Image (tube, rainbow, N blue to C red; front, side, top):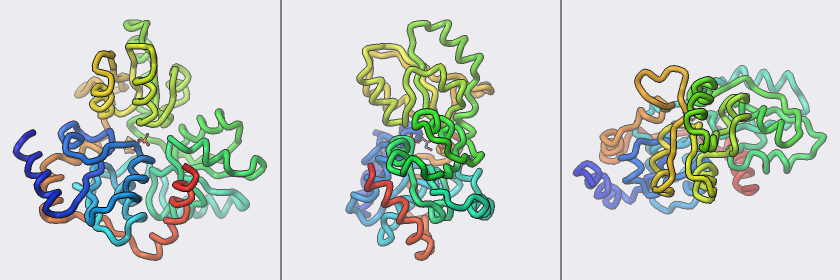
Amino acid sequence: MTPLQQAIRQLKLEKDAVILAHYYQEEAIQEVADFIGDSLALAQQAKRCTQSIIVFAGVHFMAETAKILNPEKKVLLPDLNAGCSLADSCPQDTFADFIARHPGHVVVTYINCSAEIKALSDYVCTSSNAATIIGSIPKDQPIIFAPDRNLGKYLNTITGRNMLLWDGSCVVHEAFSFDKLMELHRQHPGAQIIAHPESETHILETASYIGSTAGMINYVKKSPHDKFIIATEAGILYKMQLQVPHKTLIPAPAVEDNTCACSECAYMKVNTLQKLHDCLLHETPEVTIAEGLRHRALQPVERMLQLS
Ligand code: 13P
Ligand code: SF4
């Protein structure tokens, strides 16, 4: 443990704070976190935690979800610039207009969106529970699904629905190169490809398993195979490798990989250990939401948690 990590641990105790981290955070941050999880587990944990300060080592929509669930707590994000391309691909006004142009639809949104978009939704979901949430809606009920078109397409395939899809995407999961992936697979013919459903259809079609970050870790743990090519953000490899020290994990290659052999989310990596320390020390930057908006966004999030 480095002196900076020790200082964070000390501050956590002094300030009655908890650190929740996503699997895509850098290793040094995951090491000081009290809880590491996928989007669903983090939302569930945010609802459960008793500390008066939540430090969210993740991106803005995750910290915002924690605030939606905990209006009385202080929610801190190490850097407010930790955004998300998927959330950005769904602006409030255009989405409200889209809903108005398609009356009679139930609106299901992926948790990777702003509080304003959640407030326009009937249900929120994550990649862990999307099929269950959609399955709870009567079969003849038309559905709008936003913002991720790749996840939406995948869900249409596995649920047999024909949801109307918003045209958003994640820059990280769209960066995988099919040709490089196939070349890598030729070099490691015994490896199983596993993928996050934010990836494009031609990548998903190569995968032996498709699931959320937590789902992928569980799959690798339980699988009899010992070599995997992992098509999601590379931060997941830290926790995954700890769980399966004797298995070989190979990150799926991105189209442009001059600086890195794999895909990294620049938004997630905006957070650093130093920023985490400083935000705990100064109790800023804080994520806040107007109470009316929070209240409207809470209902679809609560519906998701009840169904999960
Ligand atoms: P999950 O952790 O829910 O699988 O989501 C992945 C992701 O892209 C988070 O931004
Ligand atoms: Fe958003 Fe993609 Fe980064 Fe997840 S990996 S936070 S969906 S940009």
